[in-house]
Every structure is written in structure tokens, then in C-alpha cells.
Amino acid sequence: MPIEIRSADLESDRAALVELMRQALTPESDVERFEWLYRRGPHGAARAWLAVDGGTREPVGAAAAFPRRMWWDGKERSAFVLGDFCMLEKYRSLGPSLALQRACMNGIANGAEAFFYDFPSQGMMAVYKRLGIAPAGELVRWALPLRSGAKLEALTRSKKVARGLAPLADFALAKRGWKGSKSACDVSLQQGRCSDEFTALDQETRSLRGLRTARTADYLNWRYLAHPSVRHEIFAARKAGKLIGYAVCAAAGDEAIIADLNCADSAEVVARLLHAAAAHFRKRGASTISLHAGARHPWNEVFARAGFRAREAAPIIVHSADGAMSAALAKGWFVMSGDRDS
Image (cartoon, rainbow, N blue to C red):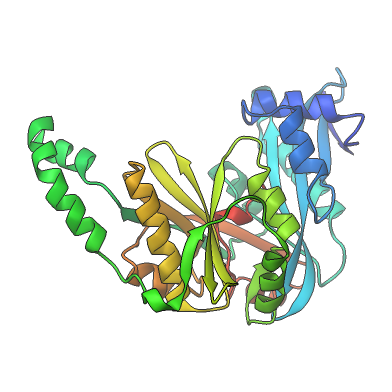
């Protein structure tokens, strides 16, 4: 039977969306995740579409768009980040996927100044290729080794030898990279929720050149501190008591992730935040700390000086009604993994 596409109602279709995503996307799909991601975002409620089997009337696929407020050279822009695209295995062919993605894109077309972005999987890139949409850039993983034990054990094939060599190797790792000047700022773990000082920093950084998500206190509290399945920690950089930057981090097994960075365009402050995060997770036993940033992220040189090394990359889609705008948006974008949907 043919596949039909329709808009989803976040209330009446909630159970169907949650179950569909649990089966086809992630075992973490539940009501709590849905309410947090689809209905509580401070930039507005999500929009979703369902692919329905024309014979059984059962939902077989879904796609969603999550609104984002962005600052582009100081001016506000409306955007959507696409996510939660999924199809039941039986229906995973290009035709239904194209129809579902077209419906999603058409549903969020709100004029020349609006745009959407996506971090597509390899399978989704085939869909975008058929739609005539090419990647606007790449998201690059940068990695900094923190502990040498696992690597040494693999090289020596001896736990005993690795344990003997690790302290010296770990000491050398801790000394690697530019750490900025201690006088640049004081860095400490944020206690409790983000307050108005984070909104004030967002207002200060909005006027800088480039593209960035509007990171108010409400947004940060929702996106990171209220996340239903990931515990985030925020390292706050202050100068004379004033917030001038922060890094949002999370642990993932024996790896630590820096999901977000923001500051008033100071390389010294960025370096201090990177060092603070690395030192914190090294003490907690992490073997590597990583961050994902756009291939043309304005702070890539700082990441390299701090000892991070560029690893694998994945495509980023940026699209608007104005093709020239899509290309411009990909330049000077402070994009990181925290800019994903969830």
C-alpha cells in the first residue's frame, strides 16, 4: 500500500511517536524525553510529521523540526534543527523517506530569512542528495588524550608494563597544549541552574560576527541541565566576578565530551575552559576528552593550540530559500555538538 504523510499532533499522536521512535530510532524514547524535547523547549514547540501505511493506517515513520533562535552578526534569525527522522525497517526505502523529508522541509519554509540545519547520517545524506541539497560544511571531532593506560597496554600487550609506564606518560599528556594565562579568568563548576548572568553573556556575544544559537539561561537550563538522560556539568569562567564564558561537558563512558562553548571571543578564556575541563575529567579517570565543532569554527586554531587533534568529520546541512544565504551561514558558525536536536 502507498505511504501517506501527514502533520502530527503533539498531543493526540504522542503515544504513537514515542513508540515509533523507540522501535526505529532509540531505546531512550519515552514520554519524558518527548515532553522535554518536543514541548518544553524555550524557543517553541517542535513540529512533527508522520508517515502512515495507507492500508493499515499504522504510523511507520516520523520526522521532526525543532525551533531555534539564532544570532547572525547581531541580528535575530529563525531556524529549525531537524532530527528524530526514522522509518520502521520494513519501509526503509528511498521513496517513503523522500516523501517524509519533503513534507518536513515544506512545512517549515517560512520565508527567505528562515533556514534549517541538520546533522545527517550516511543514510540521510542519500535522501538529501536526491533532493539536490549538498553539505554546507562538516562537523569535526577534536580529541585530546588524557590517560595513556589503554593505549600503552595495546602497544606493550602487558598490563604490568603499561601500569609502570603510565604515570610518566600521563604526566607528559597533562603538560601538552596551550592552557592560556591564569590571569585571564577564574574557572569553577557552576552550582545549580544558570541565572540571568548567562542571559547577559548571550546579549554581549550576540553582537559579535558569526552565527550562534541564542543561549539564554532558560535555553541552557532546558538543553543541558534538564536533559532526561545525560548529566551535564558547566564550567563557568569569571573575571572580577563577572561571567565571561563557559563550557558545557558530559561524561560518556571513559570519554568526556565538551558539548558547548561560549565566551566574548577571547582565545585565552577558551583555552582556560578547555584546560579546566580536561583536568577535571582526567581526575575522574577519563581517557580522552573530545569536542565536535564546525570545520570553519572560529576557535579551531585555539583547539589545536590547546593540544586537541582533528579526527573524523561528518556532514552538516544548512538550507534556506536563498542559496547564497545558506553558504554565508556556514561561514563563521560557532556550531558544536550541543547544537544538535538532543
